[in-house]
Amino acid sequence: MIQFKTPRIEVEFKELFNRNRRLYQLILVAGQYSEFEFRKEVTITSLYRTPEENAALYAPNVEPISKPHTIWQAVDLRSVIYSAPEIYKFVQFLNLWTVFDGKKLTAFCHSIPGGSQHFHVQCNA
Image (cartoon, rainbow, N blue to C red):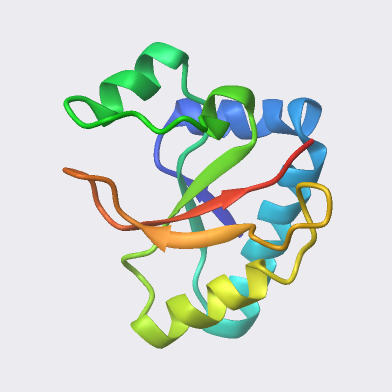
């Protein structure tokens, strides 16, 4: 149902259960939806980042003010396995969930300069 890019991410996902159970549950639901709707397994490509790792990822560009990966509030999922219509549908599904005090923005598909396109999914604890 859920695959991990690295062994570290697999350990972090287990820790996510304690750090942010809502996000953990949302990723489980995303995995189930992807298997049911697209017959594809979700792969987590990034979860927790230290502040130093986050800064290095965005260098030499400007690091965003919001840093949800550094506080266990964001997960990145591989998007390359999905077609454009599937990406649209997956993002629409993920954005049905209410997070961040009633706001619906949970997920989007984007890339950072020098990085690959991916789903960014976030949820407060």
